[in-house]
Image 1 (cartoon, helix red, strand yellow):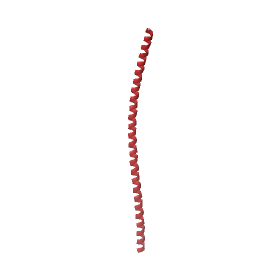
Image 2 (cartoon, rainbow, N blue to C red):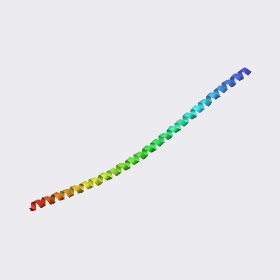
Image 3 (cartoon, rainbow, N blue to C red):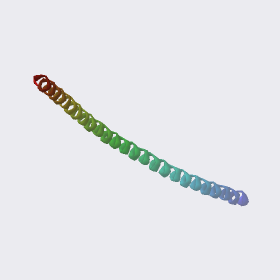
Image 4 (tube, rainbow, N blue to C red):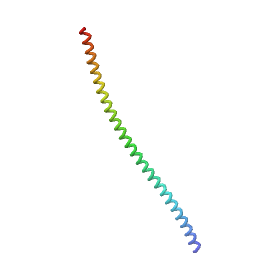
Length: 93
């Protein structure tokens, strides 16, 4: 009977060690998963910030394009006026 109890204690001791090892491994994997999740959240926030920056840049470039378009139209009108003036001046001679 005593031998069976000692054997049972050995088996239980081995089982407890195994369970402890599994618990440590599970905790380690849990920490890795938490770290990976936090990294993904960080990357998502970085991408969101980058997207906002790019949208602001696009809006700025659109405004610049509109200014250039207006300036071009104004210059075309000035050119046409000057050409008309030149034509009138030539015809008056």
